[in-house]
Length: 229
Image (cartoon, rainbow, N blue to C red; front, side):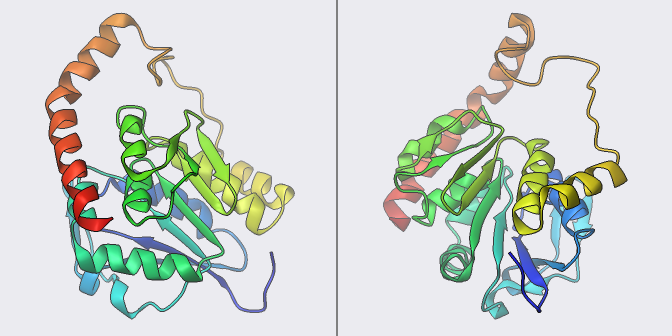
């Protein structure tokens, strides 16, 4: 994919977004030649999350188009779905984008925007079961592509996702060069990053921590489905 103008990759933030969902991919995209990442929010308001504040953001309503729409996930995704200004912007920008993408629970936002009907999509393993609420087909892949829709799994999958998109926008050698330049060579000290690899004790602990949130999120997403679809 080539053009004389920089390719724009838009990250639409919202309160409660998980910062690594967009800062991970952003770090790669900002080094990609011929690409211009844009970070936006409703009214350009600062976004506070987990002790960090992101300011100087572009007003989301003022952006007319983008080449790649990249929606991050986070605990605030349900509130973002219920924000008519945010969801309307996602729908409008998706109509202009060559690629519609997400990281983690950002795919739930894409689903709520009616962009995943009948499409395979990735999501954080703990929340993947909610994708069918919006007609999407859950896929356990770390990076999943269905047509022009590319979705990444939970949080750290955003970097694998970014390299996949980078290769699509440029070429595999450029993407691999970027990987080497940023020394992306993951070697975690524990092999407990997915439910099938974690021990029974670890899995039980995380599921216990998520239990209350899962019930609340399902109820909220079911309400959201009724309101937005």
